[in-house]
Image (tube, rainbow, N blue to C red; front, top):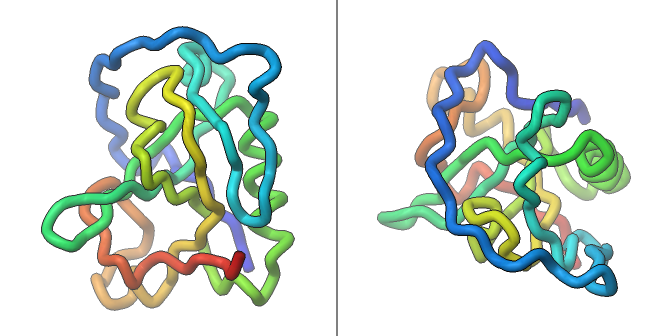
Length: 147
């Protein structure tokens, strides 16, 4: 299994303005529950220079999912990547991502849960692409670990 982070080769759009909510309380820290990162929120500084991006899959329209680039601190990118790699063959994947069913990565300060998932090479092969791009994504392009 390999891990690929979104590259600058892909054209990344400007992120749209977001609604800000109150910062979470110190006691409400994110934690892992199996493959789920519980109680996570994106902070206003997560897209600051020096931080990293990670693929985010959100519910889309017309029976499709939506693939987007999300901002995470370097420490969270490392943790997400390590968690994804820890699944080994139980999560067949070529690219790691997070599933964001509540679309929390589209709104600063919004609490929610993210699941480690893998994006499949078969999906790229079927589309005749060499790398993933933001936009509509077939649901069968996403592998989810059990649990």
